[in-house]
Length: 243
Image 1 (cartoon, rainbow, N blue to C red):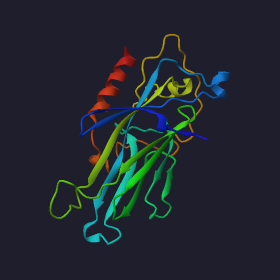
Image 2: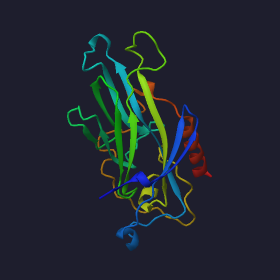
Image 3: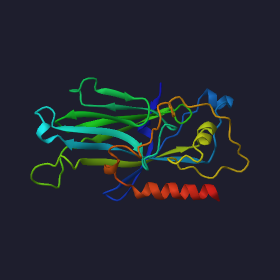
Image 4: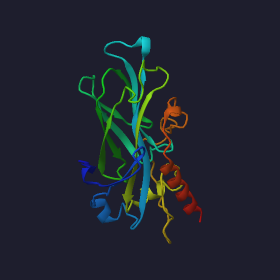
């Protein structure tokens, strides 16, 4: 039974408009670790910047009493890269008034769209591949349908966008995970330790099975917020790799 990451170390910082949270997830030692079949790279941290949020459009003349907005909730790479090498699946917990309120998205892009009239808190549970972490990460996001700083009729062309930025840190990663994300554009990986050789990798089940999993050409990408923290973090990591 996977464990939840409620006990993860959380450090708050950043500006009010772009709150930054660093969440450290440590893998529980299991039999495979003890037997050496899933060796770990000590004193190394792998960082994955992610963004989760919602984008909501007012339906205007098409709106009804029960369906005034169309919205999308998602987990994406902070620079819109494919997260399938790290995340196995995401569970979105909607309001109980929805049919099948527990939705499981098993391949990137990790998102779902719905129509409704009310705002509510969405539960987001991120599950990782077995060689990444055996805990899942629980996040919560408030769906916003109405802008707070505008008066008059709501626009059908300009959506309400609410996003949060996190950096998920995995201390002492497994060798397989560490090798798989070498040169991965969505993952911050330190320089390879001296004398370390990359193991032969087994394929990850949901990676590249259904085509591209990035969100660079996503139909909503023009509304995604830009988090400069992620850009700077990934550029620094790329520079270190080339030294």
